[in-house]
Structure formats: C-alpha cells, structure tokens
Length: 184
Image (cartoon, rainbow, N blue to C red; front, side, top):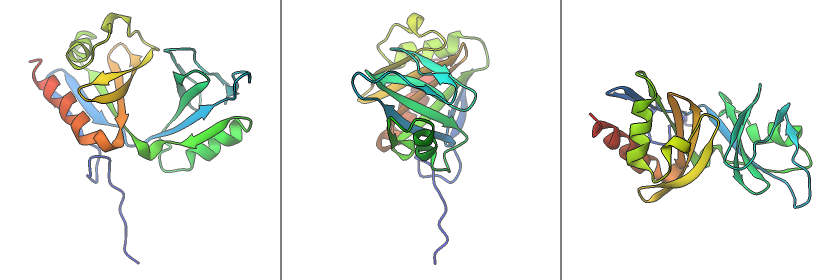
C-alpha cells in the first residue's frame, strides 16, 4: 500500500506561516470543527462544562470552544484535535443534539500582532466591511471577505481567527497576506 501523507488546505506538508510587518499569519491545521444544532424548542445544552454562546459571541471552555453560527446552531472547536474523530466526541457529550463533522470543510488562519492591537484592526478594516471597533474579544461574526464568506473570531486584543471554506483556502490566504503587505 502507498504511504499517504496528509497535506494542509493549501496543499503543503507544513502549515503556512508568514510574518508581514507587525503581523504573523498562521494556518491552523490542528483545529477540529463540528457543527452542533438543537431542535426548535429544545433547550441550549451545556457542552463539556461550557455554556454555548449567544448571538455573535464565542465561548472558551476547558476542553472545547464554540461560536454561534445561526439560531440553535454553533460551531464547536477542538484545538489540537484535528486528527481524531472530534464530532464523535461532541456527539457523546451532547447525545440529544445534531452533530456534523466540519474539520475538513474549513480553513482557519490565525492573525497575531506583536505590536499591540492596532495592526490587527488595521488589517480587518481593509479586509472586511464590519465595525471593527465592535469586534471585541469574545465576539464572532460572519461576513464577506472579497468574494468569500468567512467567520471572524476575536480571540484576544492581538489575535483574530479568519475561517473560510477550504475550497477557497488559497484565495483567502492571498487576500490576507496581500492586504497585510499593503499596510506597511
């Protein structure tokens, strides 16, 4: 049998990472993702000790993180769990919910600033049409970026995750990198 080696969404053997000015852009290949939804009228479950976030929010638990995607629906994130059956773990923790594996359908780019909050905000102001001042830590929004639909998750003052469909990985990476280069 042929030895198979996993590749990233960008077709490489190692995650993409580049330093552009005060920004570091890094492909997060270790992020597992599952969608979780509940039936209409069903209460919002607690998942692995974490209360699922409300509209436009994200939450961080001890085992997983989550962000709201639609009424009665969330994406559940497992950092460092991309190589396991993450959806099965989520389903075990929430057997009354509908759970779908999403890990291979999305690509996530973490953008970090090593020089305060302003470089991240400057990048977002050029990339997306949202109120960047309203994107506070703990917020998650879906918006357009060039011709793509993306999620923006504000994880910290100097850290934002931009998540898009895996099929647009190269276009998304190019948009982020070229916009960052134009900030100099």
